[in-house]
Length: 156
Image (cartoon, rainbow, N blue to C red):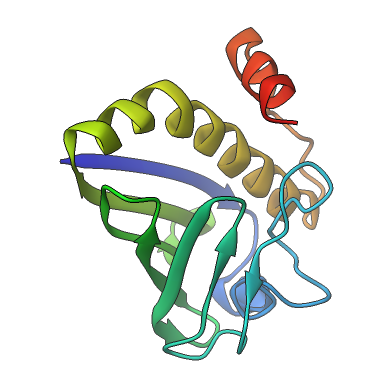
């Protein structure tokens, strides 16, 4: 089982950050770092059943609670069986923006996850959290490792 979570505390209420969830995959996306990574596309926006993804990662919207959360179910790459979700949670210092990935993987999927996808996924998610936090004046924190820079160069 693979579990991967990224979080950032935002200095605002859930209501003030709700637009971040609702803007996902739209023209004014407040979270997705489209300048650095393949654009997130959904054929019918954030409606349940809407299909899409980014780069080689494919999924569909399984659940959507406006202003609170969205959950995507993987359909590709082959060997990834699970979901990833973005949600806002209450926090004593504001609200917590959290991305959670949970999946079972075939042996090939597990190897791909650990060697290729996880380092890129972690860098992408930290860029996304930096973008979200930037809306509230917080400076970026993400720095790509040498391995991530190498993977990005090889995949260009």
